[in-house]
Length: 44
Image (cartoon, rainbow, N blue to C red; front, side):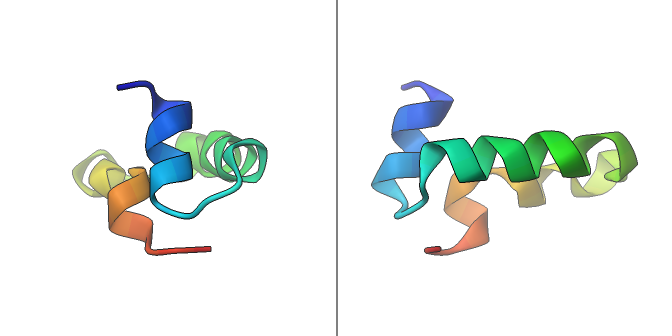
């Protein structure tokens, strides 16, 4: 399953979700990277 489809299935706008993830990625701690996954973020 693609990340785009996974975001859609979890109620996120794919563009907004990817923009947010790519913005947060450089400062996200490696141990907390799982928090960026669509199913862990809750619906938009």
